[in-house]
Length: 171
Image (tube, rainbow, N blue to C red; front, side, top):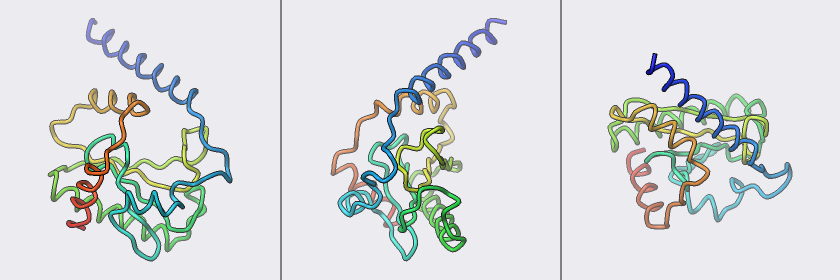
């Protein structure tokens, strides 16, 4: 009984934190500045680029290896992508996973893609988050990190360079 109350309390706490985060979040309006179309941002975070897609290291990674896979063409939502772009993006997710696995040894990963401000899309350029998980990672720890994500510090340039090299050398 005590275990059920404890778990219920944790679920409630994470639910409240998530609601506060989503309510306080102010996504940029459509048509405003897009960081994924900014050469400065792309050059700072890029570990891979081809004809249709770009792989970026997250500047505020949830976990080591957290990456963003974006189409080169500016589109706001998943359904705006062509079949060719989708195929290319999913190939890059696969390549990213294999590269990160070589370095971190993870066996599991999460891919997140949001469409619309109602679900917390913060940048109105379609993008996929690739987040590796390791065997010894707990779900509680992951949920805690996920809930605290808005308060996470940004990587410094040296950390960013190390992560970019780690992935690009193994892709």
